[in-house]
Structures are given as structure tokens and as C-alpha cells.
Image (cartoon, rainbow, N blue to C red; front, top):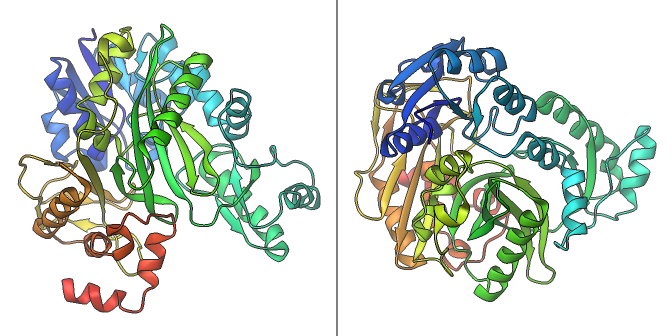
Length: 460
């Protein structure tokens, strides 16, 4: 087992890793930018190193700064968290070449899964259901449009690499196609350094259901059930749950089993999330594999009793998944929800940076935990993703978990910034959500409803 691990990330995930490493008796090294030097988890780590100024390209995305600091601190391994370098095969290979263990998939799998077109083709070959799509669009703008048009409308233009909703442009008809292609390519180039895109048949208001798989470097792979991540704004997840309500357990178990078997056949060797869209008429269709720890991992931990971060570390140290997990659960133990708290205006949903003059999460108790990298007095800067906390609750069933989440959000005290907590509280009381009638347009429909602003004011 490793004696010391460097954390190449920030915020809630860095705090989560400091905690997990401490519980495992492993030394932690928090690598931070100048802007994050005073965040609480930095002081809680066994060691820390400042790796550069606030802009990510000069700190968290600087390969040499990150690897150099990890080696100087005596780390044997590096954990990339989520975002930043977590899916960068070049960084992973550099770290390995310099003698560090990379707590993530082998670089080859980061390359394969990072190419969405190639990954879709591989999954289809192995029998996973995949929505109709083109290959990577090539040639002139007219040639790309002609190839995309063959799918029929509506369709979605998507980057071949990257994620997080960047560069995903829905196209309803012919008149919007050329502009969508140009916009998607431009956003993909800015966001991921590569402007390649493809087209996919667009499902109207599907559910977003993902399956957690844990694999090892010895040919083992098992699934840890599913998560429903349908509540999204601008294709960013904001409220997740485990299990997925309103879908039969037999159907979910069958798809989870397929996901694990496909990754086993491929030889995939770490945590991986198989993301799908679900439509009652057509069933599941493969989207992508996220080859890293997910923001929403905690809901799986709550319903399975598995510490996914500790599992990652043990697998990266060479252990077998059978020894790490034992006998995986056949179904969820109760129900769990996660709400992402963002520093943003709940009307326009624009970032709201500032200093946390008040920051008092609900007190930890049975069935409730809060992941955050901040404390009262911390600054939420404009340099990074505006998520300030994750609230995770569990209950014996979905109704009790929703009630517990509503109570926790009502207790959360934050001043100095605006947050999306009022939006989340309204969603928890929204009829379709309460009834489990989920879909990726649910958040937009709530915000567009006539009484939305008045309801926000009533909560203020």
C-alpha cells in the first residue's frame, strides 16, 4: 500500500481525498494554487505544496508543476479527483514515467474512453445498445451537414472528446444545422483543444441513468448498481439519486450486468461509470464511459456501503476487486440523494463568486453528510467551477430521503454569495419530481413555470 499520495485537485474532492487517505493511514499531500492556499482541507492534509497562480492552466493543469511537487513531497502516487487532469492520458503517462502510480485507469483506457466515437463503436461491437449516430464528421461544413442530416431530426451535435455538456448543441431542423456545427466545433476546440464533433439522434426528455463499475488489473469487474442523474441544467447534473425510481429492478440489474461484463471483456482496469440515456419506449442507450471518480459517487456509497475512494486507492495499489469489495449488493439498501450547492444566481444561473461571510452546513447526523472544500470566511473565486458543497442524504425509501434532503437544505446557512439552494428546495417539492417522473428537461420546465420567481421570493 502507498505511504503518501498527492492530491492533484481542489475543493470538495480534495477534502474527500484528504479524509479517505487519513482513514486509511496514508499520508496526504494537498497540491493547491495560490488562490486555494487558505482553504481548510489544505491545512488538514499532512503536507501541502503551492503549485502556481490561480488560473488552472498555470497550476492544476500544469503537468510539470503537479508532478514535480508530488515528487518533491515524497509521494508515491497521485490522485487526480474529477475534472482537471483526471481524464488526461498524457498526464497519466508522464506521472507513471516519472515513477508515480496514477490512481485511475491505465493511460490507454483514458485515450479510448476519451474518444467518444471510438468508445461508442467498441461498446456497440460488444453488444451494448447505442443510439444511432454518425462517425466523426469530416470535410467541409456542407459535407459534415450532409452526413449529420442522414440521421434525421432532431439530433445532437457533440464533441468527440471532453464532457460536462460543453459543445453539445441540439438541432431541431435543417435551418439550425450549420450554425450548430460551427458552434459545437468552436466550443470543443476552446474546451478540449480539439474541435472534432459527431452527430447523434436526439431523444426528447430522456432519463440519464448511469451504472457504476469497479474493475481491476487482474481481469475482474463488478457493478455497484445505478444512479439517476436526470435533474440537470444546461446538461450539468445538479440532483442525483440511487437507485433509479420507476424503472424495474430486473431491467436495471440486466443493464448493470451488461455494463460490467463489457468493461471486463475490454480489460478495463479501474472505476468506470457507464452512462446511458433511458426512454420507456426504447430502453437504455449507451452515452459514454467516464473513467474516473464521479461527483455523485457518494449516493452509491450510501446504498451499497462501499467506500469508492478507498476502493480506487486499493485497486491502484494492485489489489483485486473481489478482495476489495467482497460480495457486491444485489440491490440498493434504502435510497440516497445528492444535491450540488453552487455559487450562482437561482434566477439567471450565473456564477456568484464572493467571500463566505456565513457558511454553516447542516450538522452531520445519521443519514446526512456534507462534502465541501470551504469554511466560513473562505473566498469562492471566479477561477474554478462554482460548486461549494455536496449534500448527501439517505433514507429507508425515496420519500424519506427527499424529506431529509429538504430539511438539510432548509438548515444550510450561507451569506456573501448567492446559491442555487432555493431552486433545489423548489425541485424537491415539484410534483413530477416527487412522483419520480424524471427527465433531462425537468429543471428547465420548473424554471420556466409561471410561479417560479414568486416561489423563490417566498423562500428568501
